[in-house]
Length: 210
Ligand SMILES: C[S@@+](CC[C@H](N)C(=O)[O-])C[C@H]1O[C@@H](n2cnc3c(N)ncnc32)[C@H](O)[C@@H]1O
Image (tube, rainbow, N blue to C red; front, side):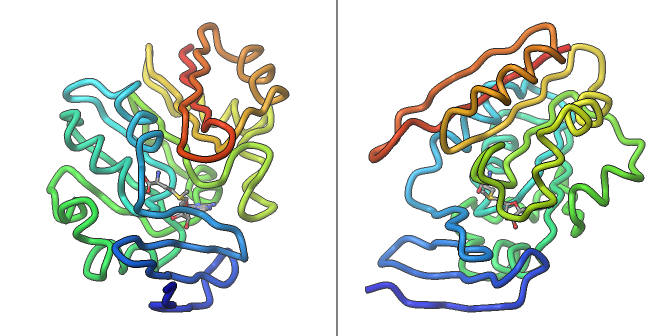
C-alpha cells in the first residue's frame, strides 16, 4: 500500500514524499520525479564522467543515488544544488538518509539550497564534471523555467562552468533528438548512452566534452 509520508508546498509546486513498502517516491508538481527502487542510470550519469579527485557539480539531489556514486568514484569535492528544502531535509535527517549511507555528512559535500538557474546567474565556480538531473529530461521538465537549461543559451552557460577537458553529463527518461542535435552543435565530443530500465523506453544519458 502506498502511504503519503509528507506533503509540503515546495518552490517548484506541491512536493510529496510517498512510501511503497521499502521504496520511497518523490513527486513534484504532480510529476513523478524519483524513487529509490533502481538508480542505475542516476549512478551511471556520474560514474561515466567522474574520475578520482574530480570537482563535481550535481544539479538536483533527488534521493541521492548520483551523490553516493560521486563519493564512491572518489570525487575530490562535490557541490549539490537543490532548490527544495524538504528534499534536503529528507536526505539529511529524514527517511532518505539511509538510501545513500548519510552522504550529506561527507566532508567533501556542500549542499546549496537554491534554484539552479538562480545560482548559475551569479556563480564563478568551475568544475571538472557537471551532472544535470533536475527533470525527467530536456523535453519533460518539472517546471517551465527549467527548460531554459537545455536551450542553446543554457548549454552555453553550462559549458562555461567546465574546466578544460571537463564533462557535462545530462540525464533523461527518454530520447530527445532535438536536444542531442543542440549538444552536438555546441560540444566537440558527445556520447549518447541508452540505459535499459525494467519497464518502458530506456533512460538516456549524454556525456559532452568541449
Ligand atoms: C530527478 S531528481 C534527481 C535525482 C538524482 N540524480 C538522484 O540520484 O536521486 C531531480 C531533483 O532536482 C531538483 N530540482 C528540480 N528543479 C530544480 C532547479 N531548478 N534547481 C535546483 N534543483 C531542482 C528536484 O527538487 C529534485 O530533487
